[in-house]
Amino acid sequence: MSEREQLYIYNSLSGKKELFEPIHQNFVGLYVCGPTVYNYVHLGNCRTFISFDLVFRYLKHLGYKVRYVRNITDAGHLENDAEEGEDKISKKARLEQLEPMEVVQHYTIDFHKVLEQFNNLPPNIEPTATGHIIEQIEMIQQIMQKGLAYEVNGSVYFDVPKYNASADYGELSGRKIEELMAGSRELDGQSEKKSPLDFALWKNAKPEHIMKWPSPWGMGFPGWHLECSAMSTKYLGEQFDIHGGGMDLKFPHHECEIAQGHAATGVKPVKYWMHANMLTLNGKKMSKSTGNTLLPAELFSGENSVLEKPYDPIIVRFFIMQAHYRSTLDFSSDALSAAEKGFHRLMQAVAMLPELPVANDTTFDVNGLIKRFYSAMNDDFNSPILIAHLFEAVKYLNDIKDGKLFITQADLTLLSKEIKAFVFDVLGLQLPEKQTSSNEAEIEGMMDLILNLRQKARENKDWSTSDEIRDKLAELGITLKDSKDGAKWTKN
Ligand code: AMP
Ligand code: ZN
View 1 (cartoon, rainbow, N blue to C red):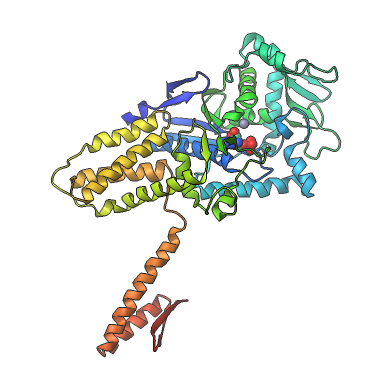
View 2: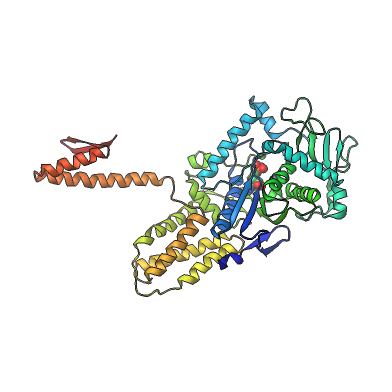
């Protein structure tokens, strides 16, 4: 497909849009940092995962065979993303008097449920940090063999200044090592680290620490940055195509991932780095630590102080798609209500497709329109521009219905196929869950009609038709009860 050759991706590493050329023809390796499962995911987290679902879906639509790996962080992520302190999961387990794995299980199940509600496709592999301790130990050993990590008191640290002597620590985040040094706390003489910039690959576990594993350096646990390097290498290779995550993970998490992979294998691990921008609430980053959050469950139920009414997950997905993934997006009642109107207008037009009249000629440029759908997505997954072109299509479809524009059967078939592919497969939209209640309304309407026809038959003393209707409905599990106010029906 020629469209495929023209996909451009904004690479955070170069700061430019680059032509996407996968390392292995037709295959794409995609790794996205998953959640730390110690709490319910908030809408900000969901935005990032929905953004990468769009990337996954479009790559698949272009015909690539994509292996999408998204981890579950169930160990090693310390409080405040710091180098010292308590493990986020252990802390929750201690506070709630649970096993750490009970915490992990509870929030992993919730995470899956929420992403399914948003109609996200599951990744192909969802590895956990605790399931890959051996791989992490092996990677640390590789880095130590290169002389780029050192052990102190049962912990192992990555030697940032030594790595930087022949590489560029800071290449992703644009930070300079001198500035980082100047900005870092002077070592107080108590720290085991040679440099304040060094980060832990393995931490010695104190006796009270619950989550710990044996290693060549004693009982301990892996560093947060290391798990992503170990799991992405295991499933996607030493070098793979796309690594994604939220913007806030660029430094230090992703910077450290580059350093670890590069140190261990001698090659830079990732070809295209992609970073999704933040969802804000009242202009401030949505964040667990500040409490400025809105949870998906609060949004769907309407039990929150931000929005005037509940919203269906698919409307929220559409709202998210209306912003480019690299722009910030602010969550508000007005914006969501506008998205809801737009969503219904788009869906009505899609539903109208099979009923449109056809003509001998087409009086607008169908191929040009379809090309614009692809151009939008090929320009760094620009979903808001794609949606603008879909609304352009909605206008044409309404004009066809009103007899102002014409389309041939062949063009209508082609246009319908492409519109549906972009709306359902690429944007991942679907009819809202509430649609079931409108199905119920349809059934009510049809039953009224049937009962009226039966009533007419009875008035004409056509008992056989009346009985036939009653018996056929009974076969479908619908029971009729005649009364003086007419017949009533119930479904078994
Ligand atoms: P965490 O569980 O905190 O490691 O976050 C999971 C993912 O959500 C990461 O990719 C974060 O960058 C992303 N994330 C966190 N807060 C926000 C936000 N307000 N908007 C968008 N993405 C976010
Ligand atoms: Zn990660």
